[in-house]
Every structure is written in structure tokens, then in C-alpha cells.
Image (cartoon, rainbow, N blue to C red; front, side, top):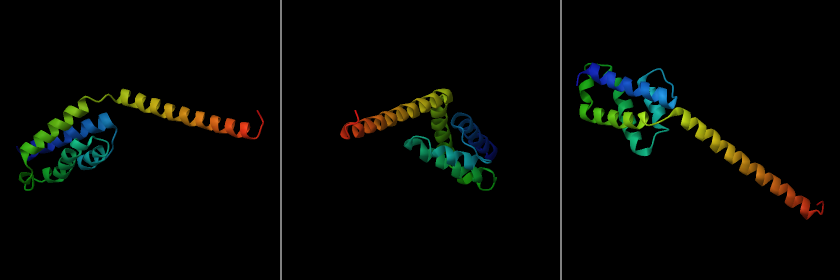
Length: 123
């Protein structure tokens, strides 16, 4: 694998992570490091490997230090996972989760006030 192919592979994974996960970063290394924080545990090592390989891929002399088979496997695994994500669905799930917790805390507060009122004989 040539240095340009390796760099293109890493950039493609970083672009997909930016689009699907909403992570930012000026470079592929930063984007992949941020994406690793929200990915499943088994894919974090692949993302960390790709993030570490990103600066090496920029240099033609250092690019051969990166294992091309491992880079392709890592990119394929991460890409397969990211393609299965739906950002709209993730966002709506987060909103519903927040609404559920807000409702629970509201009910607990109302219950606490009712208990205090019952204890003082106000009801």
C-alpha cells in the first residue's frame, strides 16, 4: 500500500466519522481520536491505531512503518460500524432518553412534596 493510498484510507474513515458522529477536528488524527471516545470498546483500538497512523501516512519515509493489512482491517471494521449508524435516529433516542429522565425526576419531586404535605397534615 502506497503512502497516498494509506492517507486516503485514513481520510475517508475520518470524513465518515465526522459525518455520522458529528466529531470535529482539523486533521484526521484529531477527528479519529474524538470519534474513539464514543465508539464501542472493540472498535476503539482500531480507531486509535488509525489515529496514530495518520501522521505517519503524511510522510513518505514513515508510511512504511504502518502495517497496511491492519490498517485495511481497522478501516473496514470502523466503516462497517459507522455506515450502520443513523444520526437522526441517535438524536431522537437521546431526546427521548432525556425526556424520560426529566419525567422521572419530576414525578419524584411531586411525590416528595406530597409526602411532606401529608406529614405536616396539609392534605
